[in-house]
Amino acid sequence: MAETVFWCNRSLLFITAIGSGLAKYRWVCNRPGLIVRGENFERDAGHRRLHIFDARRYMESPTPVVFFSPDDVEDDPSAPLLIDIPRPDRVNYRVKPGRVRLRVIEALACFDQIPVGGGDGQAID
Image 1 (spheres, rainbow, N blue to C red):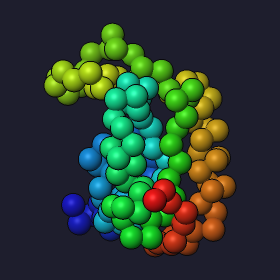
Image 2 (tube, rainbow, N blue to C red):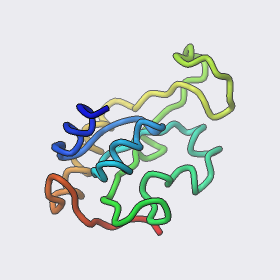
Image 3 (cartoon, rainbow, N blue to C red):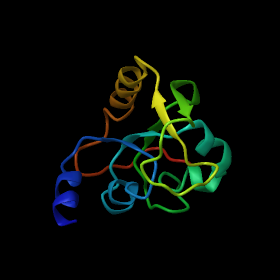
């Protein structure tokens, strides 16, 4: 864990799927980043669960995050699950070709004013 936090604090931004691993990037290190989530998750999660890693309700002075658009991601319910816990919001998904590059460019532009090691960006209340 110490190594992860060490490198996280030195990163410009992260790119990852939504999940509990974001606690290190957001709650511990408050790094800006790009978050991927599937259509089923977005539909079933509700506002609080969707924004647990970027809302001021849960973080003090959160740096901004960019979410992949629902149009960027396709759920693939026929793909085998890596974690075999059946839930309606737990399905594999894929990012449509070319969309990662677009979102990374968007994220870099959004985070251009944030110094490495922290910052005070816009966030959801």
